[in-house]
Image 1 (cartoon, rainbow, N blue to C red):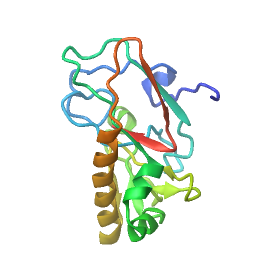
Image 2 (image 1 turned 60 degrees about the vertical axis):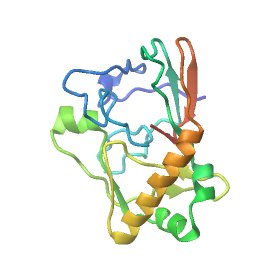
Image 3 (image 1 turned 45 degrees about the vertical axis):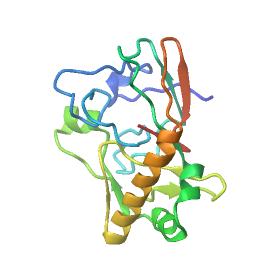
Length: 186
């Protein structure tokens, strides 16, 4: 599957992240949050180039050690191919243009800089049409104009439909492998 890596700006470079709610982070779009819906996203890392998906991991492994008490927590998964099937051609063309700014991961901005840092304009979709790659930042995405914002809203609506259809409820000892470049999770 590749070489396991850690990033100094995420959990001090540890390769294994214990994702649990943290006091003071309940309402953040981060792995410290617990009281807000975590937006659809790919895991990414801060890069001085201001393109935050240039070195993001190819895969993520989610391992459930202890599920929530009521069994209601779920991971929503939206594959880029499925999303492209439900979006119209104009929206797909816009999503392939470098007209979106991604916010750096919240752990970096909150713990290191204290303010949001935005990427250079980048596309949301890339790669061949039959095997598209997708990128959205959990900490925020903005379109650089009205057309890009409209495409982003259409994508978010599509994510809700596709993600709910692919909802996974992990139980203790179960794992989920996510292709971080081809799909998004929430």
